[in-house]
Figure 1: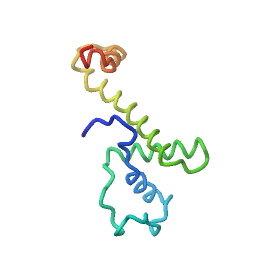
Figure 2: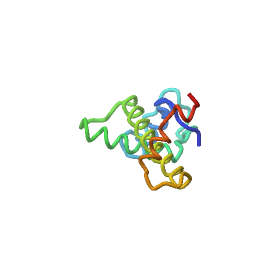
Figure 3: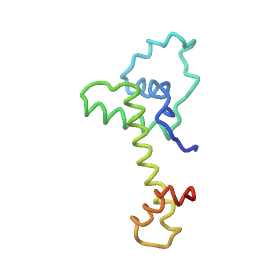
Figure 4: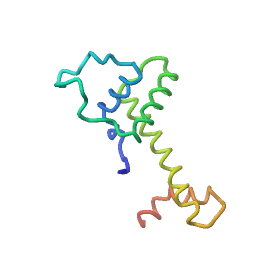
Length: 116
């Protein structure tokens, strides 16, 4: 799994597929550039959960269907928060300490990571 660095990593075709699964988009309406009913590009499972969550949060906040750009930004924000948690859990046992905040500071310190 490659580390994501931009909201544009959540492609619009991924969002469209999730919207179809949620029943928010008509499957019969196709984009003019699509040739068949089947999708060539499938949404990766690890990204799908962030898109589902982003649509749910934004719909509750605004009361209407969010735009693709809003969904991309929110999904990327959720991904970054989850990534921080993964790093802390990964290095928690390695550093032989009981202080998770200490581990979080080390995991999030880009100066240590990149050698600044």
